[in-house]
Length: 364
Image (cartoon, rainbow, N blue to C red; front, side, top):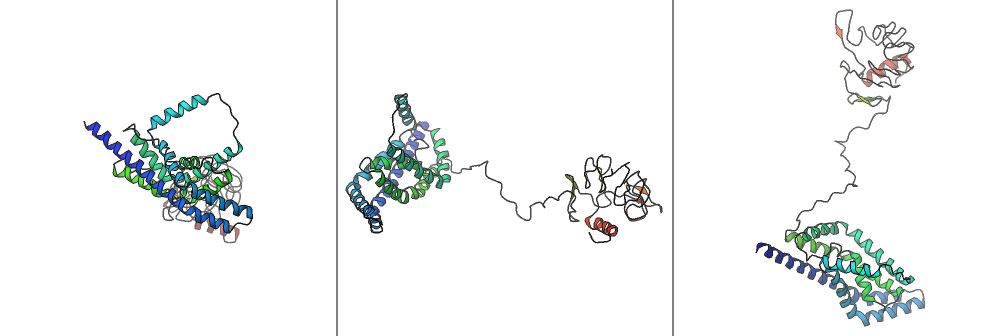
């Protein structure tokens, strides 16, 4: 009993929606036909040739003559789309089977007519994309509850264009149809938002998916605000601000001076590892550990090598010649005065620029 009651409620809802559709479309068509005479007279008045002027006056006479039948035929042509989905699909399949294997030539005017309908229908569908998406979801949901619901494609604008084209029939030639379809686009196809909103609201009031969340995988992520946006990546070999991570060869050096960092792979400019790695080192092409040849400016290796390093008089580790400024050895060596100093590659931009500035004799 409860199931039959619920089915009856769905039937009442569907009937109400159908009446709403035909009533609103009838009103739009009535406004189109009532204003067509004035629009056509204005077009005739602004015509640049006698031929065009004659065409507009003749079309105005035709519209007045067929006004009532056009409005009635239009609604009659819309109603078949609102029949139950199963019935419509069965008829389509039957018609498809009857036409299978048949070949026929299509007149050029028919092709142009089809293109005209398609263009207007697709433009209108794009305008109402969100409303039609909501209707699509609600009609699919309602189809799970009752077999009496019409197809989810029944309310596409192209079907209303087809209904209008069938109403015009053979009484109007192609050029006149194009003029009337321009009026139809302005007065009907471009004013369907109220119709779609009304149907969606009726479904919402009936509890058919009151809330819909549509996700589009192609939609780009919203741009972060300036407060939350990450800083732009630092180019390899470029000095970053003091309070930001320094990036060398895809590694972010977050250790402050006096901290520790032991990584592998390229680190400082040139792609060399900081400690325990292999490959190129500081400018000059020398390895960071155990290498020979130039390391820092002056040509000395950073560890275990000989020759000058950074300006100063203390080697970096086990080396001879100048190293970093100061009195203490680096990388956890014991200093002469007994203090333990731990130093890593995580120098700030200011310190590096000062050291290089002293060496080159100019600010860096």
